[in-house]
Image 1 (cartoon, rainbow, N blue to C red):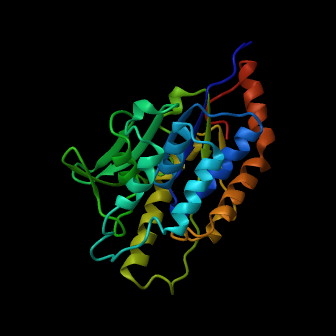
Image 2 (spheres, rainbow, N blue to C red):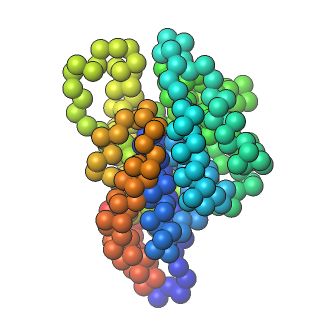
Image 3 (cartoon, helix red, strand yellow):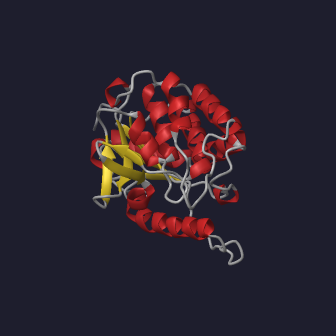
Length: 271
């Protein structure tokens, strides 16, 4: 029998505004005494994961999301030219995380982005912090790529939208919070270059998330999250509640996993 509690990890998917639901997931976990101590995230999941890993409270992370909504933090630019800059995200994060480095975080954090030039997944876990977060959020056709050490990076969702793999072997129980379900798209909205590009991106995300979902011991995927548009950042409180309800719905399963681990019975990918 194991005498210690399991080391719990959480992986937070990308999903634009839907990523605000991750705040509700974390709120539910902390309320019942389950505290993840290793974190991975992509895109909006990288933002929430960074704030949590830094040690911000749920109230502080929620306030960040609400202010971001009011300022239209992730405004859509001209799809032919890309988003002007992601400097607004940096301007919002700098005061919250004055030390711009992974080493200043309370918990280990892994952020994914896509290396455009070398055509591969990039996983950031040390050194400069804010630039990788910005890169992870740079949705193609919407935001400009972010340059780091001479290479251009965009949204990590192209290769790994739910970054389970970087932390799977670093934790005993892995919780996944996935806010990007694939739903059938009506034909009419797929008329503009931006709408078609977004749909292609969604298909790529769905395809690369299958293995990541299987690697999770406990998966939280809000069933009604698809009713919220990925670019609608004005409904933060609703999205937090969606994530909270989804996490609470199957909390008994997570408690059973923790007890099984304590008795030496837990296995990877039990979902």
